[in-house]
Length: 428
Ligand code: PLP
Image (cartoon, rainbow, N blue to C red; front, top):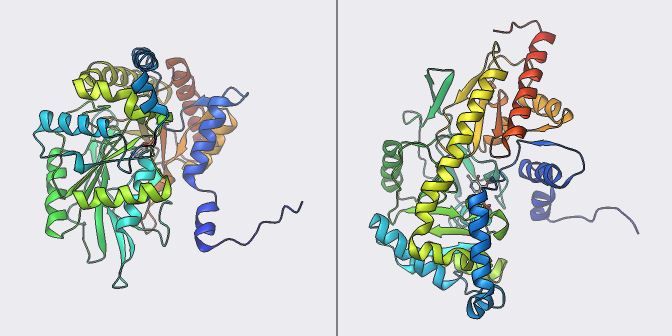
Protein backbone atom coordinates (compact mmCIF):
# COMPACT_ATOMS: atom_id res chain seq x y z
CA UNK A 1 0.00 0.00 0.00
CA UNK A 2 1.22 3.47 -0.87
CA UNK A 3 2.20 5.60 2.07
CA UNK A 4 1.68 8.76 0.02
CA UNK A 5 -0.37 11.24 1.92
CA UNK A 6 -3.71 12.15 0.34
CA UNK A 7 -4.50 15.81 -0.36
CA UNK A 8 -6.17 17.37 2.65
CA UNK A 9 -8.72 20.14 2.93
CA UNK A 10 -7.56 23.40 4.48
CA UNK A 11 -9.23 22.21 7.70
CA UNK A 12 -7.22 18.98 7.33
CA UNK A 13 -3.98 20.85 6.67
CA UNK A 14 -4.54 22.95 9.76
CA UNK A 15 -5.49 20.14 12.12
CA UNK A 16 -3.27 17.32 10.89
CA UNK A 17 0.00 19.20 11.32
CA UNK A 18 2.24 18.72 14.35
CA UNK A 19 1.55 21.32 17.04
CA UNK A 20 2.95 22.33 20.40
CA UNK A 21 0.11 20.62 22.24
CA UNK A 22 0.68 17.41 20.22
CA UNK A 23 4.37 17.41 21.22
CA UNK A 24 3.40 18.01 24.79
CA UNK A 25 0.90 15.16 24.91
CA UNK A 26 3.25 12.80 23.01
CA UNK A 27 6.07 13.58 25.46
CA UNK A 28 3.65 13.07 28.30
CA UNK A 29 2.58 9.68 26.96
CA UNK A 30 6.20 8.63 26.39
CA UNK A 31 7.14 9.82 29.88
CA UNK A 32 4.32 7.88 31.49
CA UNK A 33 4.24 4.72 29.38
CA UNK A 34 7.69 4.46 27.79
CA UNK A 35 10.46 2.06 28.76
CA UNK A 36 13.00 4.84 29.05
CA UNK A 37 13.04 6.30 32.56
CA UNK A 38 12.12 9.93 31.88
CA UNK A 39 11.83 12.60 34.52
CA UNK A 40 8.42 13.89 33.68
CA UNK A 41 8.29 17.61 34.44
CA UNK A 42 6.65 18.36 31.12
CA UNK A 43 2.89 17.98 30.48
CA UNK A 44 0.03 18.98 32.69
CA UNK A 45 -0.70 15.61 34.26
CA UNK A 46 -2.03 16.21 37.76
CA UNK A 47 -0.55 14.45 40.76
CA UNK A 48 -1.98 11.16 41.98
CA UNK A 49 -2.87 12.32 45.48
CA UNK A 50 -3.36 9.20 47.64
CA UNK A 51 -6.40 10.58 49.48
CA UNK A 52 -8.06 11.58 46.19
CA UNK A 53 -7.23 8.24 44.60
CA UNK A 54 -8.85 6.48 47.57
CA UNK A 55 -11.89 8.76 47.36
CA UNK A 56 -12.41 8.08 43.65
CA UNK A 57 -12.15 4.33 44.27
CA UNK A 58 -14.67 4.58 47.07
CA UNK A 59 -17.11 6.52 44.86
CA UNK A 60 -16.61 4.01 42.06
CA UNK A 61 -17.28 1.09 44.42
CA UNK A 62 -20.45 2.80 45.67
CA UNK A 63 -21.61 3.28 42.06
CA UNK A 64 -20.83 -0.33 41.12
CA UNK A 65 -23.11 -1.38 43.98
CA UNK A 66 -25.91 0.97 42.88
CA UNK A 67 -27.66 -0.39 39.81
CA UNK A 68 -29.27 2.86 38.70
CA UNK A 69 -26.08 4.92 39.12
CA UNK A 70 -24.05 2.25 37.30
CA UNK A 71 -26.45 2.36 34.35
CA UNK A 72 -26.41 6.17 34.31
CA UNK A 73 -22.64 6.20 34.29
CA UNK A 74 -22.11 3.72 31.46
CA UNK A 75 -25.26 2.64 29.69
CA UNK A 76 -27.09 5.82 28.67
CA UNK A 77 -26.29 8.68 26.33
CA UNK A 78 -26.40 11.98 28.18
CA UNK A 79 -28.53 14.82 26.81
CA UNK A 80 -26.65 17.48 24.77
CA UNK A 81 -25.89 19.56 27.88
CA UNK A 82 -24.49 16.56 29.77
CA UNK A 83 -25.66 14.56 32.78
CA UNK A 84 -28.66 16.42 34.19
CA UNK A 85 -28.23 15.43 37.84
CA UNK A 86 -24.65 16.61 37.88
CA UNK A 87 -25.67 19.91 36.28
CA UNK A 88 -28.51 20.42 38.79
CA UNK A 89 -26.16 19.71 41.71
CA UNK A 90 -23.51 22.08 40.37
CA UNK A 91 -26.03 24.87 39.80
CA UNK A 92 -27.21 24.50 43.42
CA UNK A 93 -23.62 24.44 44.70
CA UNK A 94 -22.65 27.65 42.87
CA UNK A 95 -25.85 29.42 43.97
CA UNK A 96 -25.38 28.35 47.57
CA UNK A 97 -21.66 29.14 47.81
CA UNK A 98 -21.44 32.37 45.87
CA UNK A 99 -25.01 33.59 45.49
CA UNK A 100 -24.59 33.57 41.70
CA UNK A 101 -27.94 33.63 39.89
CA UNK A 102 -27.24 30.31 38.17
CA UNK A 103 -29.80 27.82 36.96
CA UNK A 104 -29.11 24.47 35.26
CA UNK A 105 -29.71 26.29 31.96
CA UNK A 106 -26.44 28.15 32.56
CA UNK A 107 -24.34 24.97 32.54
CA UNK A 108 -23.13 22.72 29.75
CA UNK A 109 -20.58 19.90 29.92
CA UNK A 110 -18.01 19.22 27.22
CA UNK A 111 -15.63 16.35 26.42
CA UNK A 112 -12.87 18.02 28.45
CA UNK A 113 -12.15 21.70 28.71
CA UNK A 114 -9.85 21.56 25.70
CA UNK A 115 -12.84 20.62 23.51
CA UNK A 116 -14.82 23.32 25.28
CA UNK A 117 -12.25 25.92 24.18
CA UNK A 118 -12.25 24.59 20.63
CA UNK A 119 -16.00 25.08 20.53
CA UNK A 120 -16.08 28.43 22.32
CA UNK A 121 -13.29 30.09 20.37
CA UNK A 122 -14.69 28.96 17.04
CA UNK A 123 -18.21 29.92 18.11
CA UNK A 124 -17.10 33.47 18.83
CA UNK A 125 -14.04 34.13 16.65
CA UNK A 126 -13.49 33.87 12.89
CA UNK A 127 -15.30 35.51 9.99
CA UNK A 128 -18.79 36.70 10.96
CA UNK A 129 -21.80 37.36 8.73
CA UNK A 130 -20.55 40.92 8.00
CA UNK A 131 -17.18 39.58 6.85
CA UNK A 132 -15.36 40.86 9.96
CA UNK A 133 -12.65 38.46 11.08
CA UNK A 134 -13.18 38.40 14.83
CA UNK A 135 -10.50 37.49 17.33
CA UNK A 136 -10.12 36.40 20.94
CA UNK A 137 -8.09 38.92 22.94
CA UNK A 138 -5.59 37.42 25.38
CA UNK A 139 -4.81 40.43 27.57
CA UNK A 140 -1.84 38.77 29.18
CA UNK A 141 0.62 36.33 27.68
CA UNK A 142 2.22 33.85 28.54
CA UNK A 143 -1.05 31.96 28.28
CA UNK A 144 -2.14 28.32 27.95
CA UNK A 145 -0.48 26.37 25.10
CA UNK A 146 -3.69 24.45 24.39
CA UNK A 147 -5.38 27.55 22.94
CA UNK A 148 -2.75 27.96 20.26
CA UNK A 149 -4.00 25.83 17.40
CA UNK A 150 -7.73 25.59 17.96
CA UNK A 151 -8.86 28.07 15.31
CA UNK A 152 -10.48 26.38 12.32
CA UNK A 153 -9.61 29.42 10.21
CA UNK A 154 -6.87 31.99 10.77
CA UNK A 155 -5.17 32.02 14.16
CA UNK A 156 -7.97 33.53 16.20
CA UNK A 157 -5.97 35.54 18.75
CA UNK A 158 -4.70 39.00 19.48
CA UNK A 159 -2.41 39.01 22.49
CA UNK A 160 -0.62 41.47 24.68
CA UNK A 161 2.62 41.40 26.59
CA UNK A 162 2.37 41.71 30.35
CA UNK A 163 3.90 44.29 32.64
CA UNK A 164 6.66 42.56 34.61
CA UNK A 165 6.89 43.38 38.27
CA UNK A 166 10.15 42.39 39.98
CA UNK A 167 9.73 40.86 43.44
CA UNK A 168 12.22 39.88 46.17
CA UNK A 169 13.84 36.42 46.31
CA UNK A 170 14.41 36.20 42.54
CA UNK A 171 10.67 36.31 41.92
CA UNK A 172 8.60 38.29 39.48
CA UNK A 173 4.93 38.61 38.60
CA UNK A 174 3.18 39.32 35.33
CA UNK A 175 0.41 41.89 35.46
CA UNK A 176 -2.12 42.93 32.85
CA UNK A 177 -0.77 46.04 31.15
CA UNK A 178 -4.01 48.00 31.04
CA UNK A 179 -2.27 50.98 29.46
CA UNK A 180 -1.41 48.96 26.35
CA UNK A 181 -4.67 47.02 26.23
CA UNK A 182 -6.79 48.01 23.25
CA UNK A 183 -10.09 46.37 22.42
CA UNK A 184 -10.75 46.87 18.72
CA UNK A 185 -14.05 46.34 16.92
CA UNK A 186 -12.82 42.93 15.78
CA UNK A 187 -12.50 41.53 19.32
CA UNK A 188 -15.03 38.76 19.94
CA UNK A 189 -14.15 37.94 23.55
CA UNK A 190 -11.46 38.44 26.17
CA UNK A 191 -9.90 35.31 27.69
CA UNK A 192 -7.63 34.62 30.68
CA UNK A 193 -6.68 31.51 32.62
CA UNK A 194 -6.77 31.98 36.40
CA UNK A 195 -4.55 30.47 37.84
CA UNK A 196 -2.56 30.77 34.64
CA UNK A 197 -0.98 27.81 32.95
CA UNK A 198 2.07 28.06 32.48
CA UNK A 199 3.09 30.69 35.02
CA UNK A 200 1.14 29.97 38.21
CA UNK A 201 -0.05 33.58 38.12
CA UNK A 202 -3.36 34.30 39.81
CA UNK A 203 -4.84 37.46 38.35
CA UNK A 204 -5.83 39.74 41.20
CA UNK A 205 -9.48 40.49 41.96
CA UNK A 206 -8.83 44.06 40.76
CA UNK A 207 -7.49 42.82 37.43
CA UNK A 208 -10.52 40.57 36.94
CA UNK A 209 -13.00 43.32 37.84
CA UNK A 210 -11.20 45.69 35.49
CA UNK A 211 -11.24 43.14 32.64
CA UNK A 212 -14.93 42.53 33.30
CA UNK A 213 -15.63 46.26 33.00
CA UNK A 214 -13.67 46.47 29.76
CA UNK A 215 -15.49 43.43 28.36
CA UNK A 216 -18.90 44.88 29.20
CA UNK A 217 -18.01 48.28 27.82
CA UNK A 218 -17.16 46.65 24.50
CA UNK A 219 -20.11 44.26 24.60
CA UNK A 220 -17.99 41.09 24.50
CA UNK A 221 -17.83 38.16 26.94
CA UNK A 222 -15.00 37.61 29.40
CA UNK A 223 -13.86 33.97 29.33
CA UNK A 224 -12.22 32.81 32.57
CA UNK A 225 -10.42 29.48 32.33
CA UNK A 226 -10.77 28.07 35.81
CA UNK A 227 -9.10 24.67 35.19
CA UNK A 228 -7.02 25.07 38.38
CA UNK A 229 -9.33 27.56 40.04
CA UNK A 230 -11.88 27.71 42.74
CA UNK A 231 -14.16 26.18 44.08
CA UNK A 232 -12.58 23.02 42.65
CA UNK A 233 -9.82 21.88 42.31
CA UNK A 234 -8.70 25.07 44.10
CA UNK A 235 -5.00 24.81 43.30
CA UNK A 236 -4.54 28.34 44.58
CA UNK A 237 -2.15 29.49 47.30
CA UNK A 238 -3.27 33.09 47.47
CA UNK A 239 -6.55 34.98 47.88
CA UNK A 240 -8.78 35.00 44.82
CA UNK A 241 -12.51 35.69 44.79
CA UNK A 242 -14.47 33.48 42.38
CA UNK A 243 -16.10 35.60 39.70
CA UNK A 244 -19.13 35.14 37.49
CA UNK A 245 -21.91 37.18 35.97
CA UNK A 246 -24.01 36.83 32.83
CA UNK A 247 -21.19 38.32 30.74
CA UNK A 248 -18.62 35.81 32.02
CA UNK A 249 -18.00 32.41 30.47
CA UNK A 250 -16.47 30.37 33.26
CA UNK A 251 -14.72 27.18 32.12
CA UNK A 252 -14.06 24.46 34.66
CA UNK A 253 -12.79 20.90 34.46
CA UNK A 254 -12.65 17.70 36.49
CA UNK A 255 -9.12 16.99 35.20
CA UNK A 256 -7.02 18.70 37.82
CA UNK A 257 -8.99 17.07 40.65
CA UNK A 258 -7.04 14.03 39.51
CA UNK A 259 -9.46 12.82 36.83
CA UNK A 260 -7.93 13.83 33.48
CA UNK A 261 -9.05 10.61 31.86
CA UNK A 262 -12.78 11.16 32.34
CA UNK A 263 -12.59 14.13 29.92
CA UNK A 264 -15.15 16.36 31.58
CA UNK A 265 -15.17 20.10 30.99
CA UNK A 266 -17.83 22.45 32.36
CA UNK A 267 -19.00 25.75 30.88
CA UNK A 268 -20.98 28.16 33.05
CA UNK A 269 -22.37 30.97 30.92
CA UNK A 270 -25.41 32.90 29.74
CA UNK A 271 -28.11 30.67 28.28
CA UNK A 272 -27.52 31.42 24.57
CA UNK A 273 -23.86 30.39 24.87
CA UNK A 274 -24.76 27.23 26.77
CA UNK A 275 -27.37 26.40 24.19
CA UNK A 276 -24.90 26.86 21.32
CA UNK A 277 -22.33 24.62 23.00
CA UNK A 278 -25.00 21.95 23.58
CA UNK A 279 -25.74 21.97 19.83
CA UNK A 280 -22.03 21.66 19.03
CA UNK A 281 -21.81 18.77 21.51
CA UNK A 282 -24.55 16.91 19.67
CA UNK A 283 -22.83 17.39 16.30
CA UNK A 284 -19.26 16.73 17.37
CA UNK A 285 -19.63 14.21 20.20
CA UNK A 286 -23.27 13.12 20.02
CA UNK A 287 -23.14 13.13 23.80
CA UNK A 288 -20.51 13.77 26.45
CA UNK A 289 -19.42 11.01 28.79
CA UNK A 290 -21.35 10.32 31.97
CA UNK A 291 -18.38 8.74 33.75
CA UNK A 292 -16.93 11.87 35.38
CA UNK A 293 -20.23 13.56 36.18
CA UNK A 294 -21.75 10.45 37.78
CA UNK A 295 -18.52 9.72 39.67
CA UNK A 296 -18.41 13.11 41.41
CA UNK A 297 -22.07 14.11 41.48
CA UNK A 298 -22.57 13.06 45.11
CA UNK A 299 -19.54 15.13 46.16
CA UNK A 300 -20.88 18.15 44.29
CA UNK A 301 -24.38 17.72 45.75
CA UNK A 302 -23.09 17.57 49.33
CA UNK A 303 -20.50 20.31 48.78
CA UNK A 304 -17.80 17.88 49.96
CA UNK A 305 -15.84 18.63 46.81
CA UNK A 306 -15.21 22.17 48.02
CA UNK A 307 -13.96 21.01 51.41
CA UNK A 308 -11.79 18.32 49.82
CA UNK A 309 -10.32 20.81 47.35
CA UNK A 310 -9.37 23.22 50.12
CA UNK A 311 -8.26 20.64 52.68
CA UNK A 312 -6.59 18.00 50.51
CA UNK A 313 -5.78 19.30 47.03
CA UNK A 314 -4.60 22.85 47.79
CA UNK A 315 -2.29 21.89 50.71
CA UNK A 316 -0.83 19.02 48.67
CA UNK A 317 0.19 21.30 45.81
CA UNK A 318 1.27 24.09 48.12
CA UNK A 319 3.67 21.73 49.87
CA UNK A 320 4.95 20.41 46.53
CA UNK A 321 5.46 23.98 45.29
CA UNK A 322 7.39 25.02 48.39
CA UNK A 323 9.64 21.97 48.21
CA UNK A 324 10.25 22.46 44.49
CA UNK A 325 11.12 26.15 44.96
CA UNK A 326 13.68 25.26 47.65
CA UNK A 327 15.29 22.64 45.33
CA UNK A 328 15.22 25.08 42.46
CA UNK A 329 17.17 27.72 44.39
CA UNK A 330 19.65 25.06 45.46
CA UNK A 331 20.20 23.73 41.95
CA UNK A 332 20.43 27.11 40.22
CA UNK A 333 22.60 28.80 42.80
CA UNK A 334 25.05 31.14 41.07
CA UNK A 335 23.12 31.28 37.78
CA UNK A 336 21.00 34.20 36.54
CA UNK A 337 17.37 33.09 36.80
CA UNK A 338 14.01 34.30 37.99
CA UNK A 339 10.87 32.48 39.06
CA UNK A 340 7.29 33.64 38.54
CA UNK A 341 5.58 33.86 41.91
CA UNK A 342 3.92 30.42 42.17
CA UNK A 343 0.45 31.46 43.30
CA UNK A 344 -1.43 28.46 41.91
CA UNK A 345 -1.62 25.68 39.27
CA UNK A 346 1.16 23.07 39.26
CA UNK A 347 4.02 24.76 37.44
CA UNK A 348 7.18 26.70 38.04
CA UNK A 349 7.84 29.24 35.30
CA UNK A 350 11.54 29.97 35.08
CA UNK A 351 13.07 32.93 33.30
CA UNK A 352 16.71 32.73 32.21
CA UNK A 353 17.33 36.22 30.88
CA UNK A 354 20.98 35.52 30.03
CA UNK A 355 20.65 32.04 28.62
CA UNK A 356 23.05 31.79 25.67
CA UNK A 357 20.63 29.51 23.76
CA UNK A 358 16.87 29.54 23.20
CA UNK A 359 14.48 27.83 25.58
CA UNK A 360 13.75 25.31 22.80
CA UNK A 361 17.43 24.32 22.70
CA UNK A 362 17.44 24.02 26.46
CA UNK A 363 14.32 21.81 26.21
CA UNK A 364 16.08 19.57 23.66
CA UNK A 365 19.22 19.31 25.76
CA UNK A 366 17.19 18.44 28.82
CA UNK A 367 15.18 15.85 26.90
CA UNK A 368 18.44 14.23 25.76
CA UNK A 369 19.31 13.93 29.44
CA UNK A 370 15.93 12.35 30.24
CA UNK A 371 14.22 15.43 31.69
CA UNK A 372 11.03 16.62 30.07
CA UNK A 373 10.02 20.25 30.55
CA UNK A 374 8.26 22.62 28.16
CA UNK A 375 9.92 25.39 26.22
CA UNK A 376 8.23 28.67 27.04
CA UNK A 377 7.91 29.86 23.43
CA UNK A 378 4.75 27.76 22.99
CA UNK A 379 2.91 29.91 25.51
CA UNK A 380 2.49 33.15 23.58
CA UNK A 381 -0.48 32.41 21.29
CA UNK A 382 -1.31 35.39 19.12
CA UNK A 383 1.55 37.59 20.31
CA UNK A 384 3.16 39.45 17.42
CA UNK A 385 6.57 41.09 17.33
CA UNK A 386 9.89 39.87 18.43
CA UNK A 387 10.21 39.73 22.18
CA UNK A 388 13.33 37.90 23.42
CA UNK A 389 11.53 37.02 26.66
CA UNK A 390 9.49 34.43 24.71
CA UNK A 391 12.63 32.36 24.20
CA UNK A 392 14.02 32.69 27.73
CA UNK A 393 11.51 30.74 29.80
CA UNK A 394 10.68 27.12 30.56
CA UNK A 395 7.74 25.53 32.35
CA UNK A 396 8.36 22.85 34.96
CA UNK A 397 5.53 20.68 36.33
CA UNK A 398 6.24 19.91 39.99
CA UNK A 399 3.30 17.59 40.63
CA UNK A 400 5.13 14.29 40.15
CA UNK A 401 6.93 12.44 42.95
CA UNK A 402 9.39 14.56 44.96
CA UNK A 403 12.32 12.33 43.91
CA UNK A 404 11.56 12.92 40.26
CA UNK A 405 11.12 16.66 40.70
CA UNK A 406 14.30 17.02 42.72
CA UNK A 407 16.36 14.96 40.28
CA UNK A 408 14.91 16.89 37.33
CA UNK A 409 15.64 20.27 38.90
CA UNK A 410 19.20 19.17 39.65
CA UNK A 411 19.75 18.30 35.97
CA UNK A 412 18.17 21.60 34.87
CA UNK A 413 20.68 23.40 37.12
CA UNK A 414 23.59 21.39 35.70
CA UNK A 415 22.54 21.98 32.12
CA UNK A 416 21.97 25.74 32.51
CA UNK A 417 25.34 26.06 34.25
CA UNK A 418 27.02 24.06 31.49
CA UNK A 419 25.50 26.30 28.83
CA UNK A 420 26.82 29.38 30.57
CA UNK A 421 30.26 27.81 30.93
CA UNK A 422 30.34 26.99 27.23
CA UNK A 423 29.52 30.57 26.30
CA UNK A 424 31.46 33.73 26.98
CA UNK A 425 28.63 35.10 29.12
CA UNK A 426 29.24 35.10 32.81
CA UNK A 427 27.55 32.91 35.37
CA UNK A 428 26.26 35.14 38.15
N1 PLP B 1 -7.10 25.07 30.54
C1 PLP B 1 -5.92 25.03 31.16
C2 PLP B 1 -5.35 26.30 31.71
C3 PLP B 1 -5.23 23.82 31.28
O1 PLP B 1 -4.03 23.80 31.88
C4 PLP B 1 -5.79 22.64 30.74
C5 PLP B 1 -5.07 21.35 30.81
O2 PLP B 1 -3.92 21.26 31.15
C6 PLP B 1 -7.02 22.75 30.11
C7 PLP B 1 -7.66 23.97 30.02
C8 PLP B 1 -7.67 21.55 29.47
O3 PLP B 1 -8.12 20.67 30.45
P1 PLP B 1 -9.00 19.38 30.12
O4 PLP B 1 -9.23 19.33 28.63
O5 PLP B 1 -8.24 18.22 30.64
O6 PLP B 1 -10.30 19.59 30.85
